[in-house]
Amino acid sequence: MTGTIAEVAFPAERFALGHTLDALDSIRFDIEQVVAYNHNHLMPFVWVGTDNRQGIETALTADESVRDFQLVGEFDTECLYRLEWVKDIDVLIQILVEENGTVLAATGKEDTWKLRLLFSDHDAVTRTYEYCRRRGIDLELQNIHEFSKGRTGRYGLTQSQQQTLMLAYETGYYSIPRNASATDLADSLGVTHQSISEKLRRGHANLLKNTLALNQ
Image (cartoon, rainbow, N blue to C red; front, side, top):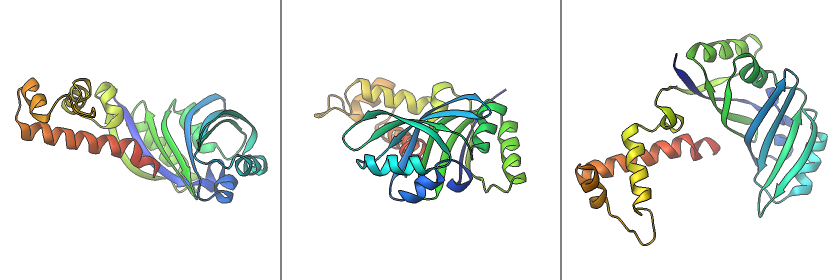
């Protein structure tokens, strides 16, 4: 059995924090972790990228999908909240409880949620999609790939790309000033300078696509 990662998007109004996202349409919400206790009890930790704490908490108080919230930490321009959701969470319940799925990353902004999800197999993705279709939820499957390469699979890296990026990091290629050059990396791996350059570029592209790009 091979795990499957699915990147999906769907309207905030069919999920949670729909009112809050509408009220704070310039603010991004990043789910750090979701704990599913049962079919009606989800408690996510959410980063909010703003220094407008009063506006955030006013919106959360008025949001019918939020039973309660607690400020965990306040930083320069971000706040971390622990929320308790009570409704409009059917999709996430299906993913976390019924399909034993995991939320690897989730971002809400304006009227859309984008999630990267890990399922035990491809059939679980299909069942989730059909679940949404039957309920009239516009779930958009943006990308699906197998989680078959251990830790590298989470970020879409090949084993060779991960090896090259880790070597570059450990030998000081990214240090300022640099302690290692692309030629040094090529010599260590016994490959050409061009091969190293291509692996670094492709590795960087995969990391950006599977981390930062989801949050835009």
